[in-house]
Amino acid sequence: MSDTPVLLARIRSHHLGGGQAVVQSLPVQTRRMVDNASPRSVDMNGTYAVGQLYVQEYRLHAPRHALPVLLMHGGGMTGAQWEATPDGRDGWLWRFLQAGFDVLVADAPERGRASWAMFPQVYAEPPVFRTQEEAWTLFRIGPRDGYAAAPAARRAYPGQQFPVPAFDAFARQFVPRWPGHDDMALSAYRALLAQFGPCLLVGHSQGGGYAARLARDCPRHVRAVAAIEPTGMPTQAAPTGVPHLLAWGDHFLPEDAVWAGYRRETDRYWAALRQAGDTADTLDLPAAGLPGNSHFCMLDRNSDQVADRLIAWLDAHAPLPRRGEPRC
Image (tube, rainbow, N blue to C red; front, side, top):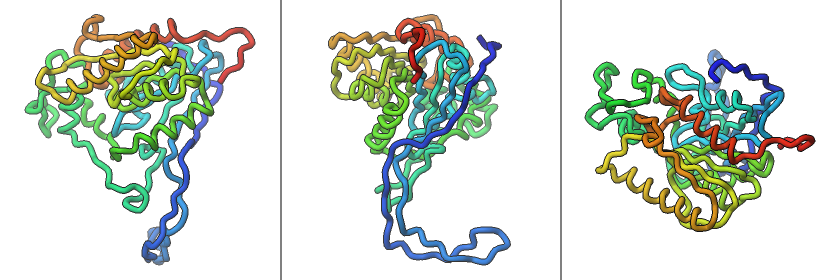
């Protein structure tokens, strides 16, 4: 698949969802806004667009599938995580296009090209930022004492599939995030689905939890969910008729309470989906013969092989276009 050409019909950008916020009582500043220009008054009181998401739409000339794939990034990340790997290989955006899917790549509210609002005037709290040290351990690339400022001194887990020499390039993708903005993000994603649905949702980490919530809350707009190491799962399951796939990577340590909690809650929700009568499959990558993956299997060195498994599952669960059927 790596050499399969892609013929696109169009690429378009959209900002969807959100609302307006009014800011008042800020002091008027005098600032130099342009080099070699005189300072001028800057009045930031007024009305702002807030809570919108950004989505880039890729439409194939001749899609093989009737429904687009919506790629939903994780926490503290943007849609860039789907576009290319940090060591310069094609990302899952390209792989899904090659497989015949139209693709939508989102930046959730407060991330990337979706922009963010001032605080505390609109957002009540400041954002949190992710350090490289935290990412090294939380994303299961290596042990805590294996991180070093000098790349050559870093020690990853044995058999690690993440391209460790490209870790610093990966860290340049990190963006601030505001905890507690789930309702804002889900509202914007619902606006996206209302415009482009039904869709096939492929969500990673926080995006995987959002995908499960959207399938539960608006199943008419969701035809399949592939959740890659999801977090923040719903507390209750309901029959949706939407097939779900759960994918787990490698390097889970028994003493890691954070990931133990994430897996416990996710496995509980998947069991509840099966009990409700929905298809809820699990792809354990090490058990399936793909060991060594980090939390970011779409960026790992075996990302193409993992994508092949997901695409095969979507091929089996997503409807192919019928003659004369309108596209989304």
